[in-house]
Length: 220
Image (cartoon, rainbow, N blue to C red; front, side, top):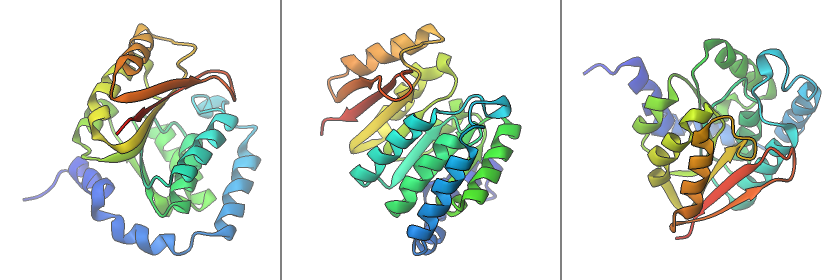
């Protein structure tokens, strides 16, 4: 039976690309670290401008990178690639941990720019970048995920949470950006849902850019 393009993408993200990933990880090290850091620094003035305006702040990306590396997480999911700034930080962390990042973007222009950024930074072997509607894809991607980061349409924050929290691995964590300046009532509803869920230890970090990153970690 022939798979649709979407199913092919999902299959790649959920395991068929693993062999490529294992080969690529052998090249991770200080040379890649220097290349990625130099690219992030060189592009720093551009993040947040024009087509890049929906990207995570630099200091918040660095904080997420350090969190993922410190926990050793290997299976990462991002909802809302934009042009790839946060995915560079997370993909770099995945490379250090011998893992992979799957990231979803619905806009073709932003998706194409993100792919260029991944290649330029040398991180494309560690990132499965999907072009599609995250409203549907998050339900179809099987997981389990050790870390999920959402920074997409704020009106869907609660829905993403409901669709993905059950796909978190034990001790996995779920992060969401912009929770201190909600642009939709669903953001506040999402925050309340995460805080009131007894299966999760939830806090909001207002350091860095001050826009607020919620982090909900499974207690088991």
